[in-house]
Image (cartoon, rainbow over all chains, first blue to last red; front, side):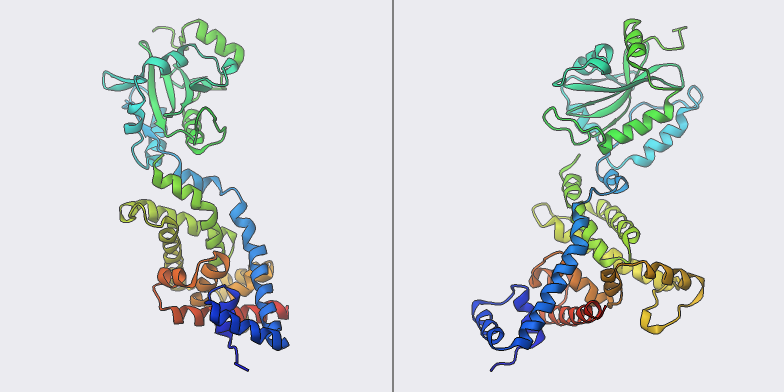
Length: 236
Length: 162
Protein backbone atom coordinates (compact mmCIF):
# COMPACT_ATOMS: atom_id res chain seq x y z
CA UNK A 1 0.00 0.00 0.00
CA UNK A 2 1.17 3.52 -0.86
CA UNK A 3 2.18 5.54 2.17
CA UNK A 4 0.18 8.74 2.37
CA UNK A 5 2.19 11.52 3.94
CA UNK A 6 0.69 14.49 5.71
CA UNK A 7 1.25 16.87 2.80
CA UNK A 8 -0.77 14.62 0.55
CA UNK A 9 -3.47 13.99 3.12
CA UNK A 10 -3.90 17.69 3.78
CA UNK A 11 -3.99 18.54 0.11
CA UNK A 12 -6.74 15.90 -0.10
CA UNK A 13 -8.60 17.55 2.79
CA UNK A 14 -8.26 20.93 1.05
CA UNK A 15 -9.59 19.65 -2.28
CA UNK A 16 -6.27 20.42 -3.97
CA UNK A 17 -5.65 17.02 -5.56
CA UNK A 18 -6.35 15.95 -9.11
CA UNK A 19 -8.68 13.02 -9.71
CA UNK A 20 -5.92 10.45 -9.84
CA UNK A 21 -4.24 11.43 -6.60
CA UNK A 22 -7.63 11.79 -4.95
CA UNK A 23 -8.57 8.24 -5.89
CA UNK A 24 -5.29 7.01 -4.47
CA UNK A 25 -5.91 8.71 -1.13
CA UNK A 26 -9.47 7.43 -1.05
CA UNK A 27 -8.29 3.85 -1.55
CA UNK A 28 -5.74 4.24 1.21
CA UNK A 29 -8.36 5.75 3.52
CA UNK A 30 -10.66 2.79 2.95
CA UNK A 31 -7.96 0.40 4.09
CA UNK A 32 -6.26 2.34 6.83
CA UNK A 33 -8.11 3.37 10.03
CA UNK A 34 -5.11 5.38 11.26
CA UNK A 35 -5.14 7.45 8.12
CA UNK A 36 -8.88 8.00 8.57
CA UNK A 37 -8.24 9.19 12.11
CA UNK A 38 -5.63 11.65 10.83
CA UNK A 39 -8.03 12.97 8.23
CA UNK A 40 -10.78 13.33 10.82
CA UNK A 41 -8.44 15.31 13.06
CA UNK A 42 -7.87 17.67 10.14
CA UNK A 43 -11.58 17.99 9.53
CA UNK A 44 -12.16 18.76 13.20
CA UNK A 45 -9.48 21.44 13.02
CA UNK A 46 -11.11 23.04 9.99
CA UNK A 47 -14.51 22.98 11.71
CA UNK A 48 -13.04 24.50 14.83
CA UNK A 49 -11.35 27.32 12.95
CA UNK A 50 -14.55 27.98 11.01
CA UNK A 51 -16.57 28.10 14.24
CA UNK A 52 -14.10 30.49 15.81
CA UNK A 53 -13.40 32.88 12.93
CA UNK A 54 -16.52 32.49 10.80
CA UNK A 55 -18.80 34.70 12.94
CA UNK A 56 -16.37 37.62 12.65
CA UNK A 57 -17.16 37.95 8.96
CA UNK A 58 -20.85 38.20 9.83
CA UNK A 59 -20.43 41.04 12.30
CA UNK A 60 -21.10 44.62 11.36
CA UNK A 61 -17.61 46.15 11.15
CA UNK A 62 -16.99 48.86 13.73
CA UNK A 63 -17.93 52.40 12.82
CA UNK A 64 -14.34 53.64 12.99
CA UNK A 65 -13.43 51.31 10.10
CA UNK A 66 -16.52 51.98 8.02
CA UNK A 67 -16.06 55.70 8.49
CA UNK A 68 -12.66 55.46 6.82
CA UNK A 69 -14.33 54.34 3.62
CA UNK A 70 -17.67 56.09 3.52
CA UNK A 71 -17.22 59.75 4.32
CA UNK A 72 -15.83 62.34 2.01
CA UNK A 73 -16.56 65.50 3.82
CA UNK A 74 -15.38 68.70 2.28
CA UNK A 75 -15.74 72.07 3.93
CA UNK A 76 -17.35 74.21 1.28
CA UNK A 77 -17.64 77.60 2.91
CA UNK A 78 -14.50 79.59 3.51
CA UNK A 79 -14.55 80.17 7.22
CA UNK A 80 -13.78 83.58 8.59
CA UNK A 81 -12.40 82.90 12.00
CA UNK A 82 -12.92 86.45 13.21
CA UNK A 83 -16.61 86.41 12.48
CA UNK A 84 -17.38 82.90 13.57
CA UNK A 85 -14.78 81.77 16.06
CA UNK A 86 -16.80 78.73 17.06
CA UNK A 87 -16.51 77.35 13.58
CA UNK A 88 -12.82 77.00 13.86
CA UNK A 89 -13.00 73.69 15.65
CA UNK A 90 -15.44 72.51 13.09
CA UNK A 91 -13.13 73.38 10.21
CA UNK A 92 -10.34 71.46 11.85
CA UNK A 93 -12.67 68.54 12.26
CA UNK A 94 -13.83 68.69 8.69
CA UNK A 95 -10.28 68.98 7.40
CA UNK A 96 -9.31 65.90 9.33
CA UNK A 97 -12.11 64.02 7.67
CA UNK A 98 -11.28 64.96 4.14
CA UNK A 99 -10.38 61.83 2.31
CA UNK A 100 -11.03 63.03 -1.15
CA UNK A 101 -13.12 65.39 -3.09
CA UNK A 102 -16.78 64.68 -3.12
CA UNK A 103 -17.32 68.08 -4.55
CA UNK A 104 -17.01 67.01 -8.16
CA UNK A 105 -19.78 64.55 -7.67
CA UNK A 106 -21.91 66.96 -5.73
CA UNK A 107 -21.66 69.58 -8.41
CA UNK A 108 -22.97 67.15 -10.97
CA UNK A 109 -26.28 66.99 -9.15
CA UNK A 110 -28.22 68.91 -11.78
CA UNK A 111 -29.04 72.43 -10.74
CA UNK A 112 -28.90 71.77 -7.02
CA UNK A 113 -25.82 73.77 -6.22
CA UNK A 114 -24.58 77.14 -7.31
CA UNK A 115 -21.80 79.51 -6.40
CA UNK A 116 -22.44 82.92 -4.92
CA UNK A 117 -19.71 85.23 -3.69
CA UNK A 118 -17.30 82.35 -3.63
CA UNK A 119 -19.45 80.16 -1.44
CA UNK A 120 -21.62 77.27 -2.44
CA UNK A 121 -25.32 77.64 -2.09
CA UNK A 122 -28.27 75.35 -2.56
CA UNK A 123 -30.32 75.88 -5.69
CA UNK A 124 -33.27 74.27 -7.33
CA UNK A 125 -34.81 71.23 -5.73
CA UNK A 126 -32.33 71.19 -2.86
CA UNK A 127 -32.99 74.82 -2.00
CA UNK A 128 -36.70 74.15 -2.26
CA UNK A 129 -36.47 71.18 0.11
CA UNK A 130 -34.37 73.09 2.62
CA UNK A 131 -36.74 76.01 2.51
CA UNK A 132 -40.05 74.21 2.70
CA UNK A 133 -39.72 70.59 3.77
CA UNK A 134 -40.38 69.67 7.37
CA UNK A 135 -38.41 66.77 8.80
CA UNK A 136 -41.50 65.84 10.75
CA UNK A 137 -43.64 65.53 7.63
CA UNK A 138 -41.75 64.34 4.61
CA UNK A 139 -42.94 61.91 1.99
CA UNK A 140 -41.28 58.51 1.86
CA UNK A 141 -40.20 59.07 -1.71
CA UNK A 142 -38.87 62.59 -1.18
CA UNK A 143 -35.75 63.17 -3.31
CA UNK A 144 -34.13 65.10 -0.49
CA UNK A 145 -34.58 64.18 3.13
CA UNK A 146 -34.11 66.65 5.89
CA UNK A 147 -32.35 65.36 8.99
CA UNK A 148 -32.14 67.76 11.91
CA UNK A 149 -32.79 71.49 12.05
CA UNK A 150 -31.07 73.63 14.64
CA UNK A 151 -29.70 77.04 15.48
CA UNK A 152 -25.98 77.39 14.83
CA UNK A 153 -23.64 79.10 17.20
CA UNK A 154 -23.65 82.20 14.96
CA UNK A 155 -27.43 82.44 15.28
CA UNK A 156 -28.29 81.15 11.82
CA UNK A 157 -30.63 78.25 11.36
CA UNK A 158 -29.06 75.17 9.87
CA UNK A 159 -30.34 71.85 8.55
CA UNK A 160 -28.77 68.56 7.59
CA UNK A 161 -29.99 66.88 4.45
CA UNK A 162 -29.43 63.85 2.34
CA UNK A 163 -30.26 63.12 -1.26
CA UNK A 164 -29.13 60.46 -3.70
CA UNK A 165 -26.27 62.74 -4.76
CA UNK A 166 -25.00 64.09 -1.47
CA UNK A 167 -25.46 64.46 2.24
CA UNK A 168 -24.67 67.73 3.84
CA UNK A 169 -25.23 70.58 6.18
CA UNK A 170 -26.63 73.93 5.10
CA UNK A 171 -27.24 77.17 7.00
CA UNK A 172 -29.70 79.88 6.04
CA UNK A 173 -28.03 83.14 5.11
CA UNK A 174 -29.76 86.30 4.05
CA UNK A 175 -30.03 85.20 0.47
CA UNK A 176 -30.53 81.49 0.82
CA UNK A 177 -29.04 78.24 1.98
CA UNK A 178 -25.29 78.21 2.19
CA UNK A 179 -23.70 74.77 2.05
CA UNK A 180 -21.34 74.29 4.96
CA UNK A 181 -20.28 70.73 4.25
CA UNK A 182 -21.23 68.03 1.86
CA UNK A 183 -20.38 64.37 2.07
CA UNK A 184 -21.01 61.38 -0.09
CA UNK A 185 -24.45 60.02 0.72
CA UNK A 186 -24.46 57.26 3.31
CA UNK A 187 -25.05 54.48 0.85
CA UNK A 188 -28.49 55.67 -0.09
CA UNK A 189 -29.85 54.10 -3.22
CA UNK A 190 -33.11 54.47 -5.07
CA UNK A 191 -35.00 56.25 -2.39
CA UNK A 192 -33.95 54.00 0.47
CA UNK A 193 -32.02 55.76 3.15
CA UNK A 194 -30.06 54.40 6.03
CA UNK A 195 -30.24 56.19 9.31
CA UNK A 196 -26.78 55.52 10.63
CA UNK A 197 -24.65 55.58 7.50
CA UNK A 198 -21.17 56.94 7.88
CA UNK A 199 -21.40 59.99 5.62
CA UNK A 200 -24.57 60.82 7.44
CA UNK A 201 -22.95 60.28 10.82
CA UNK A 202 -20.13 62.64 9.96
CA UNK A 203 -22.49 65.33 8.78
CA UNK A 204 -24.28 64.94 12.09
CA UNK A 205 -21.00 65.17 13.92
CA UNK A 206 -20.26 68.38 12.05
CA UNK A 207 -23.74 69.64 12.92
CA UNK A 208 -23.16 68.94 16.58
CA UNK A 209 -19.99 71.01 16.45
CA UNK A 210 -21.82 74.16 15.47
CA UNK A 211 -25.14 73.47 17.16
CA UNK A 212 -26.20 75.90 19.85
CA UNK A 213 -28.55 74.11 22.23
CA UNK A 214 -30.89 71.38 21.15
CA UNK A 215 -32.17 70.52 17.68
CA UNK A 216 -35.53 72.05 16.87
CA UNK A 217 -38.54 69.90 17.63
CA UNK A 218 -41.38 69.53 15.13
CA UNK A 219 -43.24 72.60 16.36
CA UNK A 220 -40.15 74.81 16.45
CA UNK A 221 -39.14 73.58 13.03
CA UNK A 222 -42.53 74.56 11.65
CA UNK A 223 -42.37 77.99 13.29
CA UNK A 224 -38.88 78.52 11.88
CA UNK A 225 -40.04 77.64 8.39
CA UNK A 226 -43.14 79.80 8.62
CA UNK A 227 -41.03 82.76 9.67
CA UNK A 228 -38.70 82.30 6.72
CA UNK A 229 -35.83 80.72 8.67
CA UNK A 230 -34.86 83.91 10.40
CA UNK A 231 -32.39 82.92 13.04
CA UNK A 232 -31.68 84.37 16.46
CA UNK A 233 -29.66 87.12 14.81
CA UNK A 234 -32.79 89.07 13.88
CA UNK A 235 -30.86 92.19 12.93
CA UNK A 236 -30.55 90.67 9.48
CA UNK B 1 -18.47 57.24 -2.68
CA UNK B 2 -16.03 55.96 -5.24
CA UNK B 3 -16.10 52.37 -6.47
CA UNK B 4 -12.81 51.70 -4.71
CA UNK B 5 -14.08 52.62 -1.27
CA UNK B 6 -17.35 50.85 -1.91
CA UNK B 7 -15.57 47.63 -2.77
CA UNK B 8 -13.35 47.95 0.27
CA UNK B 9 -16.45 48.38 2.37
CA UNK B 10 -17.88 45.11 1.09
CA UNK B 11 -14.56 43.40 1.77
CA UNK B 12 -14.37 44.74 5.30
CA UNK B 13 -16.03 41.76 7.04
CA UNK B 14 -13.62 39.34 5.39
CA UNK B 15 -10.62 41.52 6.09
CA UNK B 16 -11.59 41.61 9.74
CA UNK B 17 -11.80 37.84 9.82
CA UNK B 18 -8.44 37.50 8.14
CA UNK B 19 -6.87 40.04 10.50
CA UNK B 20 -8.41 38.23 13.44
CA UNK B 21 -6.70 35.03 12.35
CA UNK B 22 -3.37 36.88 12.19
CA UNK B 23 -3.48 39.26 15.11
CA UNK B 24 -3.24 38.34 18.74
CA UNK B 25 -6.70 39.43 19.78
CA UNK B 26 -9.80 41.22 18.53
CA UNK B 27 -8.56 44.71 19.39
CA UNK B 28 -5.24 44.17 17.65
CA UNK B 29 -7.10 42.75 14.66
CA UNK B 30 -9.19 45.89 14.15
CA UNK B 31 -6.12 48.08 14.62
CA UNK B 32 -4.49 45.99 11.94
CA UNK B 33 -7.43 46.46 9.57
CA UNK B 34 -7.33 50.18 10.23
CA UNK B 35 -3.63 50.38 9.42
CA UNK B 36 -4.22 48.35 6.26
CA UNK B 37 -7.08 50.61 5.14
CA UNK B 38 -4.92 53.68 5.67
CA UNK B 39 -2.21 52.13 3.57
CA UNK B 40 -4.65 51.02 0.88
CA UNK B 41 -6.27 54.45 0.60
CA UNK B 42 -2.85 56.01 0.15
CA UNK B 43 -1.78 53.38 -2.36
CA UNK B 44 -5.05 53.34 -4.27
CA UNK B 45 -3.32 54.30 -7.53
CA UNK B 46 -1.28 51.11 -7.32
CA UNK B 47 -4.34 48.93 -7.54
CA UNK B 48 -5.23 48.09 -11.13
CA UNK B 49 -9.03 48.18 -11.54
CA UNK B 50 -10.27 44.89 -12.85
CA UNK B 51 -7.78 42.88 -10.82
CA UNK B 52 -8.67 41.17 -7.57
CA UNK B 53 -9.09 43.76 -4.88
CA UNK B 54 -9.50 41.09 -2.22
CA UNK B 55 -6.07 39.56 -2.86
CA UNK B 56 -4.48 42.99 -3.09
CA UNK B 57 -6.09 44.00 0.17
CA UNK B 58 -5.25 40.78 2.00
CA UNK B 59 -1.66 41.27 0.98
CA UNK B 60 -1.71 44.73 2.52
CA UNK B 61 -3.23 43.39 5.73
CA UNK B 62 -0.57 40.72 5.84
CA UNK B 63 2.26 43.19 5.19
CA UNK B 64 0.96 45.54 7.88
CA UNK B 65 0.87 42.61 10.26
CA UNK B 66 4.46 41.69 9.46
CA UNK B 67 5.55 45.31 9.91
CA UNK B 68 3.66 45.58 13.17
CA UNK B 69 5.31 42.38 14.38
CA UNK B 70 8.71 43.87 13.60
CA UNK B 71 8.09 47.12 15.37
CA UNK B 72 6.60 45.27 18.31
CA UNK B 73 9.75 43.19 18.50
CA UNK B 74 11.83 46.39 18.39
CA UNK B 75 9.85 47.83 21.26
CA UNK B 76 10.67 44.71 23.23
CA UNK B 77 7.07 43.68 23.65
CA UNK B 78 7.48 40.41 21.86
CA UNK B 79 4.95 37.88 22.87
CA UNK B 80 6.50 35.27 25.11
CA UNK B 81 5.48 31.76 24.16
CA UNK B 82 4.05 29.61 26.91
CA UNK B 83 6.76 27.00 26.61
CA UNK B 84 9.37 29.54 27.57
CA UNK B 85 7.81 29.90 30.96
CA UNK B 86 7.85 33.17 32.86
CA UNK B 87 7.35 36.39 30.96
CA UNK B 88 9.72 39.28 31.16
CA UNK B 89 8.92 42.59 32.82
CA UNK B 90 5.66 44.37 33.48
CA UNK B 91 4.34 44.05 29.94
CA UNK B 92 5.10 40.37 30.09
CA UNK B 93 2.89 40.01 33.12
CA UNK B 94 0.05 41.68 31.30
CA UNK B 95 0.55 39.38 28.33
CA UNK B 96 0.11 36.38 30.57
CA UNK B 97 -3.13 37.75 31.98
CA UNK B 98 -4.46 38.42 28.53
CA UNK B 99 -3.46 34.97 27.49
CA UNK B 100 -5.29 33.34 30.37
CA UNK B 101 -8.56 34.74 29.06
CA UNK B 102 -7.94 33.76 25.49
CA UNK B 103 -9.87 31.21 23.60
CA UNK B 104 -8.15 27.89 22.90
CA UNK B 105 -8.05 28.57 19.17
CA UNK B 106 -6.44 31.97 19.76
CA UNK B 107 -3.88 30.40 22.04
CA UNK B 108 -3.07 27.70 19.56
CA UNK B 109 -2.82 30.19 16.68
CA UNK B 110 -0.65 32.51 18.78
CA UNK B 111 1.76 29.68 19.38
CA UNK B 112 2.50 29.31 15.68
CA UNK B 113 5.42 30.98 13.95
CA UNK B 114 4.26 33.85 11.74
CA UNK B 115 4.99 32.00 8.50
CA UNK B 116 2.78 29.06 9.49
CA UNK B 117 0.10 31.28 10.90
CA UNK B 118 -0.33 33.33 7.74
CA UNK B 119 -0.51 30.16 5.64
CA UNK B 120 -3.22 28.73 7.91
CA UNK B 121 -5.12 32.03 7.91
CA UNK B 122 -5.17 32.23 4.12
CA UNK B 123 -6.01 28.63 3.33
CA UNK B 124 -8.01 27.32 6.29
CA UNK B 125 -9.70 30.52 7.44
CA UNK B 126 -10.06 32.46 4.19
CA UNK B 127 -10.37 29.41 1.95
CA UNK B 128 -7.80 30.46 -0.65
CA UNK B 129 -6.49 27.84 -3.04
CA UNK B 130 -2.85 26.86 -2.52
CA UNK B 131 -1.86 28.67 -5.70
CA UNK B 132 -3.55 31.91 -4.63
CA UNK B 133 -2.04 31.77 -1.15
CA UNK B 134 1.45 31.03 -2.48
CA UNK B 135 1.19 33.93 -4.94
CA UNK B 136 -0.06 36.28 -2.26
CA UNK B 137 2.80 35.34 0.07
CA UNK B 138 5.24 35.29 -2.82
CA UNK B 139 6.55 31.85 -1.96
CA UNK B 140 6.76 28.60 -3.94
CA UNK B 141 3.88 26.14 -3.64
CA UNK B 142 6.09 23.58 -1.90
CA UNK B 143 7.04 26.10 0.77
CA UNK B 144 3.41 26.95 1.32
CA UNK B 145 2.30 23.33 1.67
CA UNK B 146 5.08 22.44 4.08
CA UNK B 147 4.24 25.48 6.25
CA UNK B 148 0.59 24.52 6.13
CA UNK B 149 1.34 20.97 7.14
CA UNK B 150 3.56 21.94 10.04
CA UNK B 151 1.11 24.57 11.20
CA UNK B 152 -1.78 22.16 11.12
CA UNK B 153 0.10 19.44 12.93
CA UNK B 154 0.93 21.91 15.68
CA UNK B 155 -2.67 23.14 15.89
CA UNK B 156 -4.15 19.65 16.02
CA UNK B 157 -1.68 18.67 18.69
CA UNK B 158 -2.50 21.68 20.85
CA UNK B 159 -6.22 21.66 20.38
CA UNK B 160 -6.73 17.93 20.74
CA UNK B 161 -4.53 17.80 23.81
CA UNK B 162 -6.62 20.48 25.49
